[in-house]
Image (cartoon, rainbow, N blue to C red; front, side, top):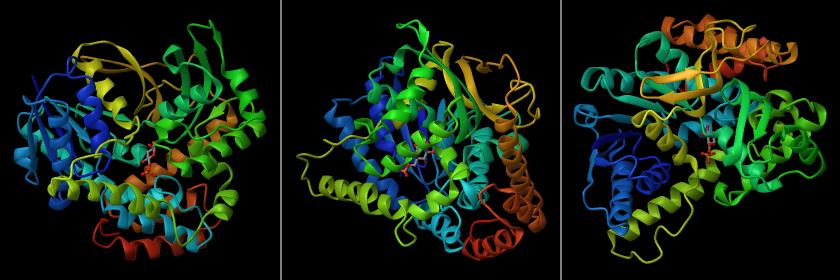
Length: 438
Ligand code: G6P
């Protein structure tokens, strides 16, 4: 039986992960579940909710622990799920609002907001990977921490031998939305996709039951009738704009289905035009998911348990749980993962960190190489992004302002080095407590 630690246990995404764990207890038998967070209050709230979930499901054999102590959290564990957000939503708000002040995209993982978040996340994640190396070096780390390409690059440099899988749920989320909107069953799909995290394209979606590549017909459908937010998005209407932009992208570039996040690089002008500079996604999450969770913990504390937990946690957690199952039972299931390129995309630099399909089994990840080169349009976009991300990681390790400025300037949402410097200086001030000294 397994010991699982969730780093960033106080996150409002934790119930979704636990919901998936509880559905799969037969495949992933748990003895101990540890919530680790550096914010004791958030961790406590989450402990109350998870404890309630376990009891409601009649699960009494799982020991639930909350802790802020690394040694207690990471000793003797088999799997560590990492989903930390360094600086919390207060800093996410700054990532989104500072670039908007200068007329640039304000987004948590893309553009300069993503770069600011990257410089914060690297330190937090390296710390956790370090603890796991010290206390449970045989444990598998399944990482959800954003921005994924940047933190994956940093971990690879500092801990090249760490047993870590870097994964993002976005491709699953896009596929599920497509399937629900246009009447397919995603479980029948074998998808071919390449790119960087939040920056890629589908090249084929083979449907095993229909026995054909359904991507061309989906592209036609996308351009005729845009998708609607699906139930598994927990009815969150703010995804609507994202899915509408997928139609705009496929109308103009009908060769592939893009990752929805590419809208920020291809159409930054539209995204800025539609943005509310005073009230961004961080504010929506703070006033929605965060508030509801706090309220739920309070009700549990007061013994008012009716109606609690009758809401949708989304599918986010299932992906990470499926990966753990595939490792434990050596299933060699196929996932979209963020891995060192090493020739998998033949005409892209070897040392890029790319997102491609891969099989996952007891010995880790086996990436699936592409059968040929990628086109110049995608290659050009990816190369600029890879170089910018690498410069940012250099800036972190070397404490180099110059490298940070180069990274900010090269980011494809930025029109000039003058604006890059203004935003960098502003962000440096806002991130004093988190960034390395540059
Ligand atoms: C998707 C992305 C994640 C991102 C999340 C943000 O799941 O794949 O990388 O962090 O959306 O969701 P939120 O509800 O916090 O805006």
